[in-house]
Length: 499
Image (cartoon, rainbow, N blue to C red; front, side):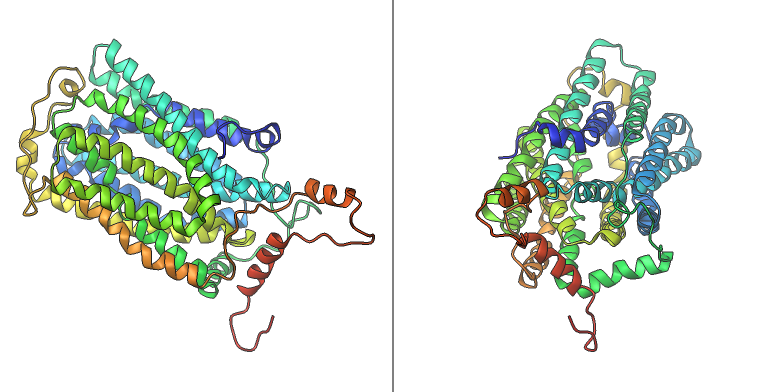
């Protein structure tokens, strides 16, 4: 199984990426309470969802343009600028939330719209930056390790953030100023991450050897190349569709869990230790997931880790006690922490360097549509019961001040579940619609995803030094050869072109 701590060579190549992610997450002390903060501070309960809609909408509009910009110019610059924008947006949220009436809503959604734009810049470029750096360094075999470890280090940082937040909330007299300061700390963490990212160079295939930049296609030309890659590879197309469908549950499931826990009587500060446990589990999950991939293959893991959450969440139809919701919260995050890095790794293996950020942004853009739909559904469900929810929402400061919280009498749906519990069930079950697309992608795959890693230059030299080969000799890495052939096949899109 992949271990958490990388060796020296991997630390040299990826250590600063890991450190940046870990520190940014460690300072992100607002994350366990983000939705709860909005749910309690906004003047109407359903308004807590509106900033999330604007955030997703901003990502939706800017995802493809920012991905194209990153492919044409610089993935490194896109990530750094995006994180600076994110830090600014986080720092402005407390000022916006202090307004009243419609001004409060407009100010808060403006902050979240800015945040969505920053995330769009980062989303398509971050993985492309790392993967191309590894290809240039001839360490292609580290791509899988990166996707597992980056998620584990992020979870390690998030566990630290939960511990810091819990310590602050327990030791200090809770006030609105203390709760607002959590947003400033999170912004500071992003700035620390940017300082580290500024020390990392960017390498791009085709420019590393000669140092010359090849002719850059236009914006529309880059977009056309990305769409062409999707159209010409059914394996990539169907897998991209599976990622889009699987994005729907990610839109509001965590927020629904938070609402369910608070309304069932949990002290709001309890979200911090729960987040610590959750992140400790999520720290090990990507490493376990990568080990399972090498044992059973990508497709089996992607399928089973969509089916198992659906089976687990069905228990809510029988009972929906506080302790069961806590258990499901941790269990489902484990499943998600296994699925995400495996899916990200598989997507990157299907992409070529010249359109890596563009195609990833197109997929994220389509996934954003699904998330926006999910958030809109959540807002509609809350709006249907706005008056009842307004009566049971606890005060922001008192909810974080300790003491027993009364169990709220939540509106019950025709299915016998409270609103947040019904959202959890419906959204998790919806992920099953991604299964046919995963299976279609496997059917059209030109080659089976192998657990064997590509040979490094050092390994190839080792083969030559064994003396078992007569010279002159050619040493061919079959895995890399197959990747090259698959990339060439994506260029053949009509009957008049032959390979």
